[in-house]
Image: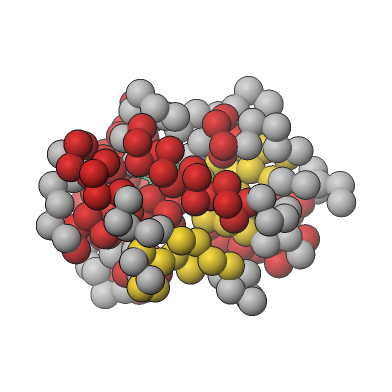
Length: 218
Ligand code: DC
């Protein structure tokens, strides 16, 4: 059984997916981590994120791998190095929508995701899981929240990492990333027609997990 959870930046997908995974005993796979690892590789190697041709030429040497740790934590590796601790840096967050818009990058990442997903049942979290990656998933959710709530959540994450930006700046960044994810031509962020819509603006994390869990019959 596969569960697809899609939604915009800071919609709470990560935390909700993790909570649901623990509750249901089904491992979670954060597909954004793979796009982030590819982006980090490009930044580390000073490869221009707007040079699609150069990026595609470099995909083969990246050796992107996704592993599931014992505690169900996802670890992402490029060239044999565990890059997980650095994939959520803000410079990666700002560049990743550009990189995730390239069809060649999406094919490459989807291949790595498919390799892991074929190993069992998963809760997959991303932008195009219900629409492209797992159109036949048994359960599909589209999780969102208001821009203000999402910006506040994102700011709290950044503050915890010591990256201090004003709420207004974070709100502008979240809005810009939404626009990039929604307006790209390949696999844009969309609610699948058969996905259950959940707005978590006025829900706690536990309430959001409860809302999703009540739909799922194991
Ligand atoms: O969920 P996140 O912020 O970690 O996602 C990082 C980026 O990757 C985001 O800009 C959208 C992109 N992404 C995507 O295009 N498709 C997915 N399935 C997952 C993430």
